[in-house]
Length: 189
Image 1 (cartoon, rainbow, N blue to C red):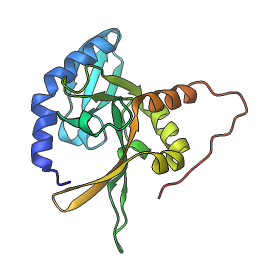
Image 2: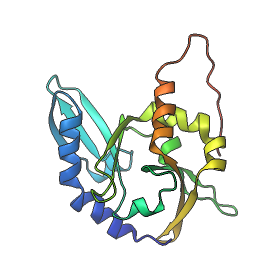
Image 3: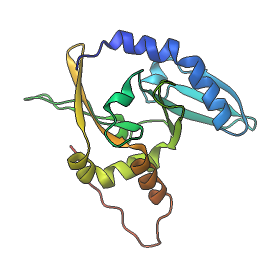
Image 4: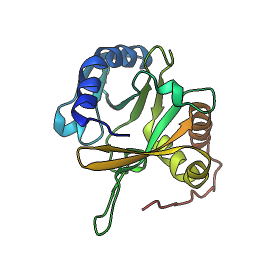
């Protein structure tokens, strides 16, 4: 599948921005303003900054699926695209880890949205618990769920499409750890 980067950027910045801002304002209690970030902050994994009444700033990375995504859902529910590689390595070129595994992202939350014809639900998930859950479950999810590469402007990325209920269960489990439990340190790269 070939994706036009400029078209996808226009989709996320134009068509989706008003919807994303409304969702963020509704989803985060005490939110007084939401603003789109500049390109420098965007490169750090934050599309929006939500400011609370008390001044706290929350960074949100928005992941919008385009209209028609539901035709690919294999499990009767929305699937979240969890990126394993932002840039797939080849030959001597080292790849770049996907946003889902990135320890350098500045995002506090990930906002997953869909076209209204595919799903009327949105999901605002805590990023670091999502990242930890993905690392923990990657070996199983990589075998069980569809993996796709996307090509755009000379580079390719890769994502695993995991049913939302599976992701939510895994993230919830990461938010309730028993004392003394050691996290595994699975490495994908």
